[in-house]
Length: 554
Image (cartoon, rainbow, N blue to C red; front, side, top):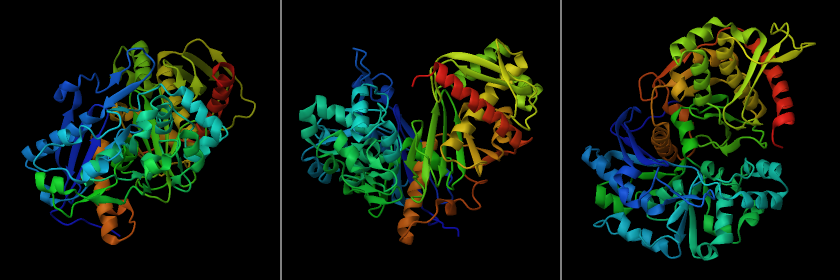
């Protein structure tokens, strides 16, 4: 069944990312009608940030951002939308994306301040004393290794923590960050009334009260039981005392956080019935912005690092990757895997073998046959996290490989490949690794469809290789800023769920619209025999496991 929005309705999505605050406005047909951005460094220079953060000069890995910078940016961005003549009265719902893992510490008594904001004054002076610490730890911070190990030990090990919360302990995750503040800034922790994520913090500003943390963003904290979608008592106790009260209740991602606060109704003429839908993290919002909505949907983001996320009913949490609550369907899960060796490693092969030209690279890629004559390459310019392997290059030739069977097949290592084989080996190697690890993580094979994004998704030769190796259709979404777009789509979706009084599939909004809107796609179809790539993938996994045993960290 197709659900639609009122004809003149607008939905507004924000993206509070590391370096900027963006806004995307969609009409009832899901077309973008306005977008604006505030760059923190250049437009708010008085905070003296570099790349919107403060780095501890001692080199201890501590990286934070000034919380008040985000407050001031919201006022500034709404002012830009006024100048762009956005009719705030037509906006029926607002949601947003926040950089994952950042945390905000509200001082005791700040809920009263939030509830009584004066619309004749900017936000900044009214909230300047609202925080127990004015510096928010963010995802770039790596100073909590000690706390990660403490939390893992307290719950019975890294794998146990992953099976409870969806991930082993990571330095950037909010649980270890909270534990560090409790251990090193005890006065700040005890003076804190509420701990927000960046997402729930921005939503709190809009509703004039403390917004709940949504289930999808809470999945990136090492604190939520992902199966029951409640705070894990064991993880909370391993982190800090009295923590559940400071975190508040969890909420489904499609739920209403509250009505737009009177401050924004009077100051910017929002409709007083405008809904604020739960904000979520940037990765969950990107999943929504790329239109993933059904188990079997997979997205591959080909950038400086390669990221893969998909939807599954049966995730398999492990020591690699992450399981999140699904932001567009509470009945299933989002899985995410990250690779350090992405575009820079592909560019290294291009520069060495293809005269620094993508056109030459593509020509060489097409000249080499699929399956590369049994040649497999492992290319790590950076220390890889998936699998955990050091910098190095490893090339193998599988003797007499036809793609039909692995029985009795042996491989031998070689020093180098010819240019054609090297080019195909980097592309096939990266994609075979992605396929192997997503299947290990609970994604079905083949996926229902793949959405490709990031810089390399403009390369049709690479898209064709993805389609062949995974054995399914590959789409590209012609829309930048997938996080703010996803937030605007989730705002509209949350409004529909509220209107119907129950959850409705987000896919119902897209029917008959994917080719005509901001979500417009183009398609690559698989060619060749995916079953032969299955054999090739199994051989790659066999070699990869051996390399991890010989070279990897344990």
